Image (cartoon, rainbow, N blue to C red; front, side, top):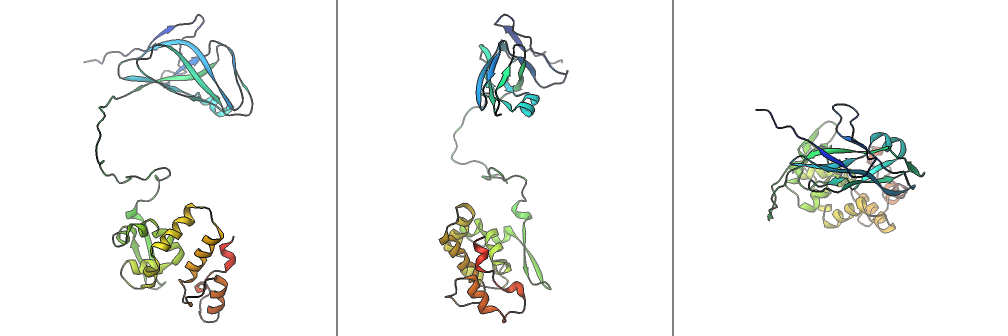
Length: 275
């Protein structure tokens, strides 16, 4: 059985209004033209009258989208682009001028495109909980990253390396530590993963307490202050085998110099925390 032909009905509500046109048979939208001349000021907006009324096919709504040429060449974009199916008034196009120069819209200029899009009208149901997904609550900037079961840390020595999956580590540490595990590993090196995988080294986990977690969170999300820098330096220095009273990188370096055999085993200088 052939599907009933869907029609987009329109009325020229203003004399001189232009019939919507397509740039090609498979173009997504119908070009809309202005029935008046108007200037869109720089860094401002203006309503453009199309002089047209529409009646859409059942199950559709209208989306007013920008024209790619105006957007790329003139910085002209479209706002308030959703028009409900039951609206029968004249379609007005809200143009935003993001450029530093006034933009002139002349009579008959193509200003935007109208796209018919399918829409569902679901019944709204309130729930106490939602189903869990792999992405879950990860929001802006979270996609395109490796999922937890694909992220591994390296522990051990050059001769005996161990690769430990993040999800195994996260099963045995509290939530506060989970949120900062990558930052903690970056600061402390392999000691953290070695102990979290119950292999060796208790020093790292002992240091990875609530204070350390809060410090790492602050370093990642808050403006650095002299106090936070000092705390970060003290925290990092204590990962080396120095006295508990040693709080600066320079002091720890001086104490360990000539004792350790590998230069990379020395802590960073204090200047590293101010750059």
